[in-house]
Image 1 (spheres, one colour):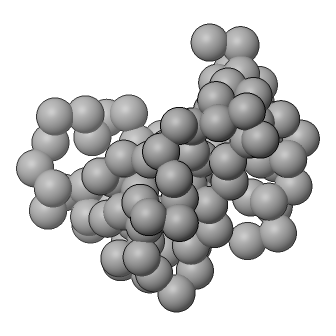
Image 2 (cartoon, one colour):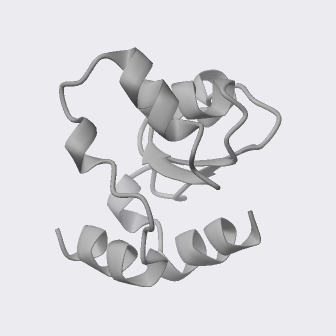
Image 3 (spheres, helix red, strand yellow):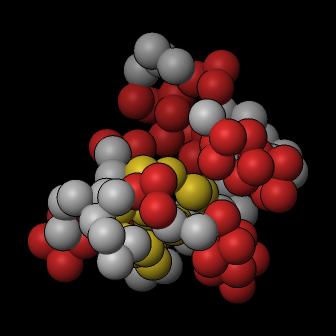
Length: 100
């Protein structure tokens, strides 16, 4: 989507994780431990990153981050006022992610 393209361009990811699609969680966990930070949606991988202590920014749509946010010492959850993930402003995501 357009938002995804904008975020990728703004973040200039150093470690693309797309090569880890459909790989064992042990491989994904190993790759996550090499990350300085992780940006994801409300997903299992975001929970894994947070549990591993990787600074994690989790984006939420209709699910409540007060209930479903990943646990971890360096986890931040963002949710739009409309509860639609696509309504989270790219600038808000970039600002939050950069502060991590």
